[in-house]
Image 1: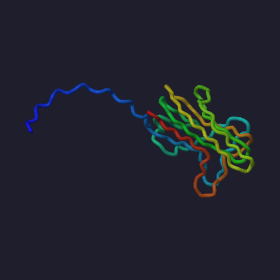
Image 2: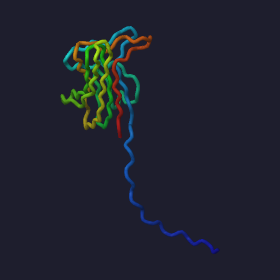
Image 3: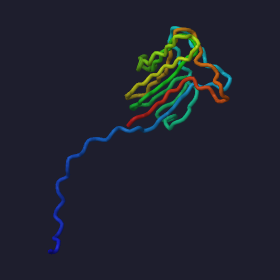
Image 4: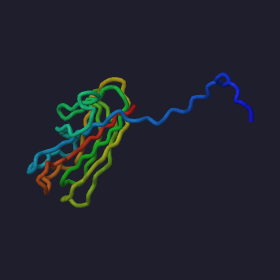
Length: 171
């Protein structure tokens, strides 16, 4: 076998491959909580009630891409996946929605939580993808069929969580 010759010139660069999947930049969870022994707020029947989010639970967006003030979440420009859940005790049904307060529009309407008995807890879930070019104030609202509590004091000695909103900022 002979000696290897010199390396040739570099060839033409190949075609760029497809872009990878979009990832997330961060997450934030806001909740409506009350101390042990405290029932949830009362929602008024047949009207949209603001879910009283009052706690920054966890995440890395608060104070940057999102913030909580007066039961409302302010989101800065970007792309977001938003998931919310709320419920009520008593009544026969409840529904949720995400509302863009800045523009007075409904972003998404959630599931109907319905029970055939009044003495039961009903849940509603709402999921939405949001792309905004400027800051927007949003809130989660619920529409119960009768005046009802957001929830009853739980059996443990922990805090009572009556609603949650989970925000993921996407690339």
